[in-house]
Length: 103
Image 1: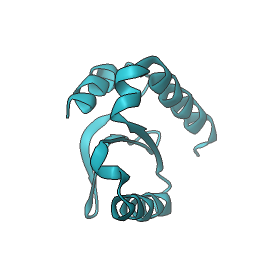
Image 2: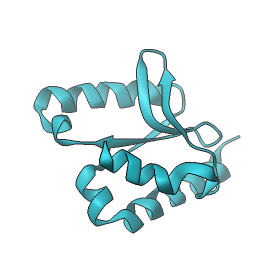
Image 3: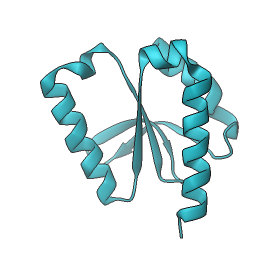
């Protein structure tokens, strides 16, 4: 999506202090962005994520990732387009926090 492409421009090449991979598979799930060193996933949610069924699926998926020690951050397309600096700040803080708390 356009929002994913915009976010990727800021995540690639270790711009936030860690390497992110795009479209990373964990078992049957594909994460939009994943930083293996930090065990941090970033998901970009478009309009289709706001139905009851989709929200339930996302919760199940997030719980599954948690079993592997993966933290999932979710942002809407609107957040990425209207507040990219806030989104990047949240991601950067999570990367730093996970770096200091991971074994």
